[in-house]
Length: 220
Image (cartoon, rainbow, N blue to C red; front, side):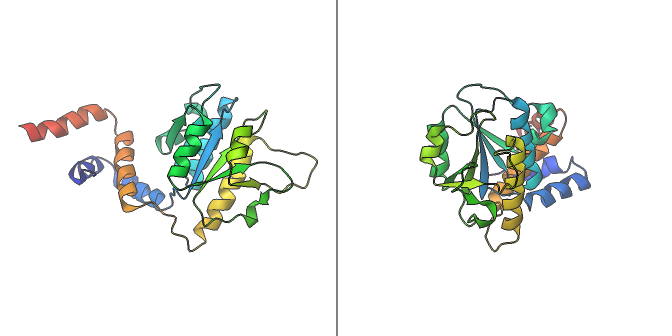
């Protein structure tokens, strides 16, 4: 449970415009879709995917770090890491099992001929969208465990796009369709309160000193 008194204490430190912006952004956030990147070799691509999640309203990014174990590049992410939840996994199986346990279907993004095109994709089901490495695409393990496959329609000679570009195109398309649907895709009230608290803490300089002052007031 969120300590509402504490939340209001922190939000009173923020400007009115800041608090209003939080509420407006949270109205457009979702966990109906989540994004997964697998062993991204070029770090700036993982950071760019996270930025696309933030811009288009996907709250959670999942990162599988079996081989490279790199962290998000904060300069390329341009602050998006403050607003998107990042879940790290050390194996494909752990990630897939966790997401399936949360009710997501596993959707592999690939350029294969028989894959579902974006506009034909059924957006009604909670889906985890998997994106693979720049060099090798998704691993065979993910392709074997996938519940479905999704691709971007292409009219040229090139068979694939950079992962950050592919993710941006797919996320924007599916989120736009989701917002114009009757599907209940919004965050729950509890999830919104949790993010309000986290974002308030991320926005306040010297938050540790502020928290100490708050809790000290109850011990006096």
